Image (cartoon, rainbow, N blue to C red; front, side):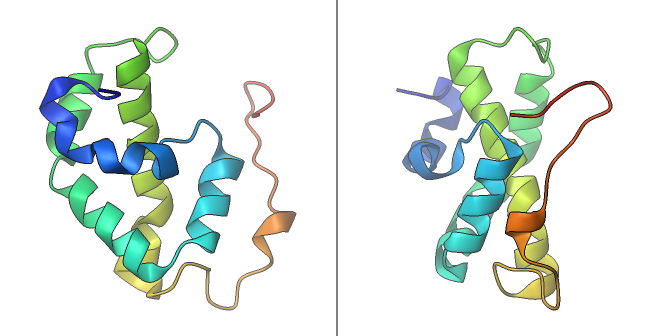
Length: 111
């Protein structure tokens, strides 16, 4: 099991969606079908409140591996939510090529 037990229904999504960097999450969003995105979105949305409550018990920089994978799934949900809720497609309509997007943080480099 890769996720904490209460979130075992999300196990099928770990390999594709539990990604550690913004660039990886952006890439999987734009290369996935809307059917894949919708399936992931629906599964995550059904458990997001419990997942966030669970994750709130850990410091961001010191999570157990299974909690980190769950956290990464929540970040991927944030990545795809606009696709489902607003755009109806993986890419941003009339947006620029996402390969040009460079994530940054005022706190240091983002991998």
